[in-house]
Length: 311
Ligand code: NAP
Picture (tube, protein in one colour):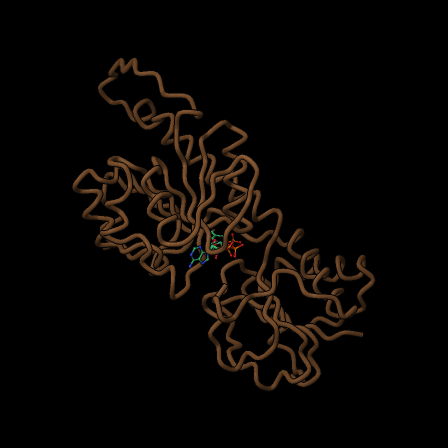
């Protein structure tokens, strides 16, 4: 019988029923403890984790075979010096589905110029027809589980899509780039730019005054990645100068976004409250069970975090 520690108190009610069921269906006999239970850390086989967890010292978990994050982003745990166990992040098919819907919806909003018609107090008969998707260039920074799925969904709608990642990639029908030169080329063509990078030392402030200036004038930015990818002051200056027409932001340096932050009041900023895509317990439980099955079978874990790269 395995011992699992569910160290994410805020989400335990969402998993309390589904997780034991999914583990049983996978043939895994497990006792699930929470941080409220009396337990011996040295007896725990797997830790299920969220960044808000009060558990910060992994040293006593001498037997744990892995820490399985319920979140896709691991920037708040990856640098923890007490964490010597393998760390796996969450790649949940239903989270991906949610992100595809958010990115597609907000891309279409800007592509079609929907705001002109939704908010039209003067009843202006603006007869301009939007261009076709084939004539709209959308670029992704980040072509991982989420960026690639979103890029492919937009390709299906005929958008002209390109993407940039750390490593070189071959994706049928997608123009892919990497490296500093690749970033400059990707930005130069991005009428709509989607940020789906993790927050790491290398990606922080990747959108700054210099890189914002490389975008075509009037570009739109969608950021469902992480707040620190953007230098806030540089973005506000670019919005005010007209270099950037609009920014739709789901993630922020400080969350909830403070009431006095200029993003709330800026007419060319849309704030969504970190709702682009959530981990869905039913599908996430299956991902957790599969990784535990692998751990027990001695097979490589899925979605193992590269500690040196930070994601
Ligand atoms: P992922 O599979 O790890 O993909 C990350 C992508 O970023 C990869 O393509 C990676 O390149 C690229 N990348 C990383 N560092 C880079 C660098 N220095 N230069 C260029 N490219 C770099 O992650 P994911 O599952 O797609 O998730 C991406 C992020 O979305 C998460 O880290 C999280 O912050 C965010 N997120 C937000 C929400 C929300 O609700 N707003 C929900 C879930 C996740 P390689 O392919 O070469 O490795």
